[in-house]
Image 1 (cartoon, rainbow, N blue to C red):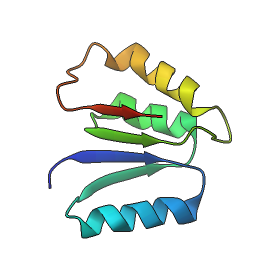
Image 2 (image 1 turned 180 degrees about the horizontal axis):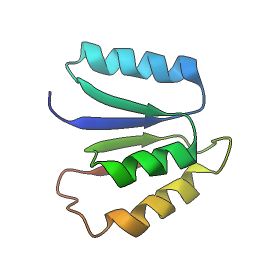
Image 3 (image 1 turned 180 degrees about the vertical axis):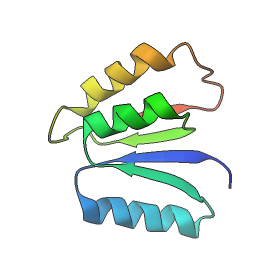
Length: 85
C-alpha cells in the first residue's frame, strides 16, 4: 500500500511490533520517531496519511506534539489524514 504512516513512541519494542504488524498487512512506507521533536521534524518534511502518536513521550506529551503539528499542517490537505493521540 502507498499510504505513509508515522509511528511515534519512545518504546522501541512497541514501535517494532506495530511496524511489523503493518508490514504484514501490506503497508510499506512507515517512519518511526521516538521523541516529540523528531516527530515534528518529520511532519515538517513530508506528508503522512496516518500518524499514530503516543501520549507520553520523553521530551513532551503527545497532545502538545499534536498541537504543534497542527500549527503548520492545517494549511495542507487533510483529505486522507488521520490524527490519533
